[in-house]
Image (cartoon, rainbow, N blue to C red):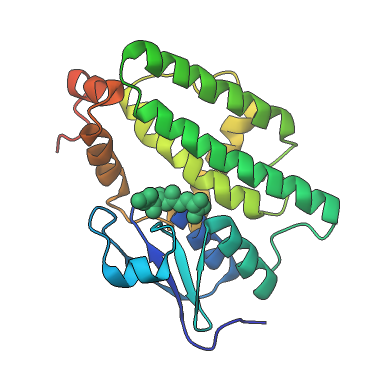
Length: 231
Ligand SMILES: N[C@@H](CCC(=O)N[C@@H](CS)C(=O)NCC(=O)O)C(=O)O
């Protein structure tokens, strides 16, 4: 069943990891959609009217505007084939819990790139490492979170791992050290077309500019170390 006779629109921001998870699900479903980027520093009125929390993503579908990325992903999964969530209710509950864990990890990543000094940066890297250790214990034989079939948890973690592609150019923070299953999962997700295409080619440069602009300990590392922004 396709929920929309009219094209789906994903109201987006080029760096937003929550947008990316919805885009990954749409691409895994093979459904065409339009991305409409908004400037979150200058939110247009039409966007604020659609998005009660003033956040991306918003999905425009069937004459309605759906907000909150996990809700968008679940809606898409309920209305478009193939299903990405497990059929078994207990397994589905477990997957939803790990999606939530992925959102908490995004908050930990934001705390890391906003760390004001080196001590906070190290503490927040250790916090991320501890969270990934929990993920390591939850992973099976791969290649995806639940085995041979990609699911919604994978769509959540693709954008999580993408941050580390840029962090790795700045320094070695040890966030994934000694976690072979997590590293293998990261590599599998990096090679998945839907994950790759969830951002534009300018993403690494845009993320570097964003990080630089934080004025944080990480930004100072960028200034002191290898010039990430150099052409
Ligand atoms: N819980 C929300 C989080 C979305 C979110 O934080 N989006 C960010 C961009 S990545 C945003 O729109 N921030 C703008 C703001 O908070 O003013 C979801 O899952 O959709």
